[in-house]
Image (cartoon, rainbow, N blue to C red; front, side, top):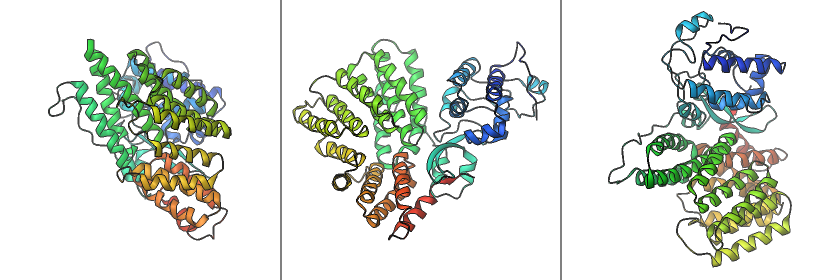
Length: 477
C-alpha cells in the first residue's frame, strides 16, 4: 500500500491534509490503526486508506473518528473544509492520479462525492462508489450483550443473513425533485406536498426507507432557496427549516443521534432566520425531546422552558412544550413536578385555540400516552401498562412504526409488573415491526426488555422473544 509522507507538501490536496491530520491525531493519542479500528468499529484497511486519501470518507465516519480520538471537533471541521475546497474530482479522492502515484498509492480512479451525498451515506443512501466505505447505521449486538446502533459498511450488511437488513441497506430509489409535481404552481407548493407524503410514509413503514429521500429533497430545496428572492426565498427557507427538523427526527429514529443533533441544530438556526417564533418554539421542543431521549434530562428541562417562553400563550405549541417539560421532570425523578405539568398540559389543551398549523395530532389520548411513558420512567409500571394498552387500542392502523414503539414500551411495563409471559408476547409483536422499519426507538426498548427477561429465561415465551430479537441485529465479532 502507499505510504503517506511524514510532512505534507505545500501543494498537498485537501483530502491528503485531512488524512494527515487524522494520522497525526491518532499517533498523538498513542493509538495504532488496529486500536482505532476496534474503538471506532471501522475496518483497519479502510482507516489506512482514509489516512492516505485513497478512499472517500463518509462524514458519519469522520464524526465517529473525531469522537473516539477526542479531537474536539477538529477532524469534523477539517472534513468540512476539505469538502468545501474539493467537493468533486474526476481522479482519486483528494488527489490527481499523478499525485496518487507519487505517494505510491494503489487507489483506483473514481469521482468523489459532494458533502450532501457523503453525509447521507450513513442513512442508507449510496454515498460512494466504493462499497467498503459506504456505510449504513444498523443495530448491532455488542460482546456484552447490549444492542447499539453503529455505522457498518453496506456490503457487510447486504452480505448478512439478518432478517430485514437487506431492506435497511438497499439505497432508496428517489425520484428527482427538480421538476415540479403535477399541478403544482410553485417550488414551495411542490416541497410542501412532498413533505406531507414523506410524513405519511414514515408513519406507515418507518424512517429507514424515508430518510434518504428527505436528504435528497433537502439538498435540492437548499439549492433552490439560495437562488430565490423575496417571498419565494422566505417561503423556501421556512420549508428548508421544516425539512431539517424532519430529517433530525428520522435520524434519531434510525439510531444516529449525532446526525439528529446536527439536523435539529441547523433547523433551530434557520428558524431564527425566518423570524417565525412559532417555528422556533416547535424546534426548541424537538431539541428538548432529543435531549431527554439521549440522557440529558437537565438540558431538556431548560429547552422545554425556552420553548414555552417562545410559544404564543394559549397555543398548542405551549401545550407541547409543557409535555416535554413534564417528561424531563420524570427523567430526573421529580414525580410531583412531572404530573403537575401533565395536569397543566391537559388544562391548556382544553382551552387552546385550534389554529390548524401546529399540533393537529395533539389530543387528550396523546397526553395520556405521554404520561404513560413517564409512569414507566418513574417505575409505576401498572399505570404505564394500562396507559399503553389504551394508546394501542386508539392508534390508527396506518401508524405502523408508532404501534411498534407503543408495543415495545408496553412490553417493558409488563415486565416491570412481573408479568414476564405477557411482556415476551407483546415484545415479540414489536420485533416484527422493528425488523420492518429499523426504528431505533423500538429496538432500544426491546434491548432493555431483553436485559430484563434474560434473568427469567424459562418463563413462557421468553426464549422465543429473545431468539427473534437476536435475528434482527448484527453480531459484532
